[in-house]
Length: 331
Image (cartoon, rainbow, N blue to C red; front, side, top):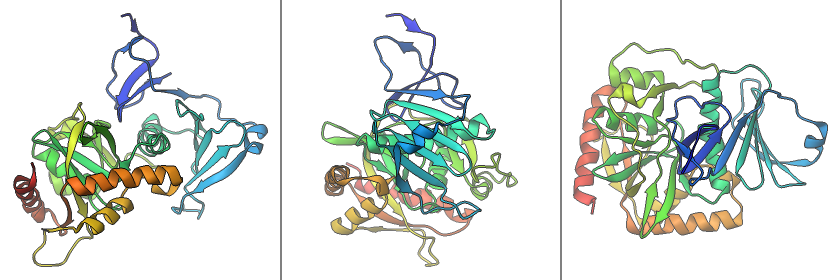
């Protein structure tokens, strides 16, 4: 078994990546010919695109999220001649995916920091690639708890990353931030490890650490990248069986908050459907697969609504509340 020094090799979401240049913040792994790569990544120096490329593709997806100019933040085209995809962000970053979803090429129309490019690659681009490959992904962050995976799902801004950081502060390993990819193993669904950092709002960093609110280091992203090592935690390297899901509801002014409410099976299923990642790009076959997986999860795992309150003073109680609930319900 002969090690392969080049290209650079990584594992994320259970995928072995080969890249023609280093990908910031990922832990490199040794590449061997006995462990072939699942996806190759090519950072291209030439941002040009031929007229023929554009002429042979049709608009497939338009994001509802707009940039400061009112343009859609993301558009995806599908190539009509070979079935590949072009994901274009309005700030000039473009990702080309081949039809078999085994190759990603990256082009930047304007200079952009390598960390910013990596954030889009490791987050939404690999999220879309996984969904197109048939992997069900929750819009959730996941942490390790006594050898199990606990997921915190919710809409953007619900506090998924902040809750994961709260568990990291208490010594728990992190499995994923924002995208929890599920793989079926035996009679369980496991959460696959993602990347070794959390994306946190500056206010969350201050709330969790007491440090002055730092400014975002990236003009393309509002959040801060916080390496897990700096929080005393680490990335969980092994996939762990999913044991419970908490749906983060809107911050509550109820005097009981933080508190947890059980969800009836049908409501739990609808909440999971609403909180899957990239669900707007699914075709009929993908949706059927998603319903099968989510139905099995709903029948076998506790799914709860978690109501939090604003303010750092509530974080300790929130952590204790979830731990108490897990102690009662984990099998």
